[in-house]
Amino acid sequence: MRAIEVPVRDRWARRLAAAGLPYGRSHRPGGEPYDYWAEGTAFLLAREEAAAYTAAARDLWRAAVALADELLGGAHDLGLPLLALPAVQWSARAGHRGLAARLDFGALPGGAPQLFELNPDVPVLLPECGPAQRDWHLALPAALRERTTQVNDLEAALTRRWAQLLPRPATVLHLTCLPDPDGEECANAQVMAALAARAGWSPEVIDHDALRWDGTALCAPGGEALRHWHKLYGWYWLLADQRHSGYALRALAAAQALVIYEPLWRVALESKALLAHLAERHPGHPNLPAATLTEPDDPRGWVRKPLFGYQGAGVHATTADGAVHRGDAQLDHETGWMWQALVDTRDGTGRSRTVSVWLVDGEPVGLGIRDNDGLIVSAQPRFVPHLIAS
Image (cartoon, rainbow, N blue to C red):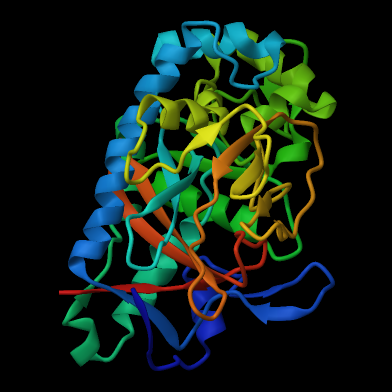
């Protein structure tokens, strides 16, 4: 993987917004603007390099799903709220169908992909990995476009999956998101809604906090009962947060009348405890750093991660010299912890890359690369579009 310069498109931020990505120019926590989308730069991968990421994602996803199903049938601790555990087990037994997932790998210079995180519940990055990268690639000079490709069948694969999930007769799909200053979450919901519409659904995007429980059903602001719900709010927070646990658990009780994407059993995959169990089950796996649920006596060479967290929040990495690196976001909830062996993926400039692979129905269909300032994935990385030499 190496960075190359590519032409900058005229009015590129507007083009990104038209493709569904309004936050190509974003803001840091203090309000300082910065370019989230790295226009003018691309990461060029060899075909074999891209294949290594997609193969690792496919194989580890299958292993993780099988292991989660096994662990939910026993007494293994995945850090889930005990009150919700029977419902999680029921969802797994019922075989509720999922839509998509995203696996995040550390890009070890010259080495194998390193699985850092599973995102099976709320896999955002859809606009940038899908339509924004596609539009960007089509706008490249013909000489470069014709000798490169991408891992980007994401939009078509999601449309096919929504078509498989479409009930007869077709019905309304409610998609919920929480508005944020840059519009990231709702942009993800809007792109997903457009893909569902292509498949025959009637999508409606609404504010997550506008949902109401009327005593018998979860309802949209107009009073319509939800029957098919795509949410961009993690199951762990729905079950653990006092603001939402009431209606979340009631909605589960009425689950015969409400289909939820992603399904509840995916919360077992969301727990980073699963990474520890996975590493224990497959010692020495080239794509799995060692991991444990027991705090090491010496923190050096380990990364402490919350069982449930987002974008590096609450992550502490201690290098061999004792230096501690912290994620730039704080946890807003209580959670357990896991420890993963530190794999330093920084290059000579001190930067690191996170390679995300999207899977739909278990098959890799999309790839996106984020460029981070340091050792830990940042809440304000740069998204760098990718090319594969053909």
